[in-house]
Length: 130
Image (cartoon, rainbow, N blue to C red; front, side, top):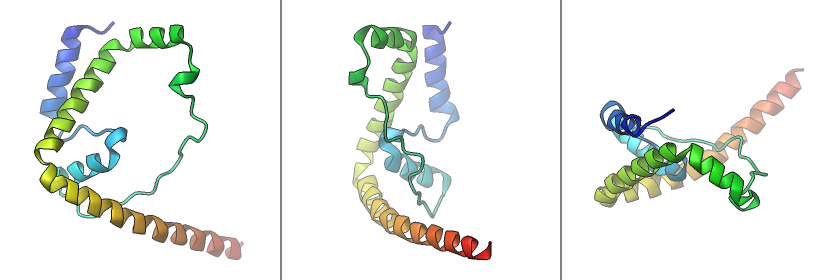
């Protein structure tokens, strides 16, 4: 069973052992921070395996939500703390990062279309080879 001491150790480890704690909720911002910290020059991605029929929180009864919440209390505490740290860092550097995120998103949009064209071309080529 997890303890508050373990929670504090996890916070310490995130702060001292990792260059960035990223979040899917802040995916593009996380990539920009990773790129800066690790010296990555080319950052692009294409979204894959996106769940279209995800169960919504609203569709789960309150007793089940309470049970889940009770079992994940310290996990949620760690998540909330790490997200607050992320947001604080981002806010303190937003004058630089906002421009980079906007430029990245524009670049990535173009990449998405090029990548999809590439995928279709490869599929046609492979089909022609069979």
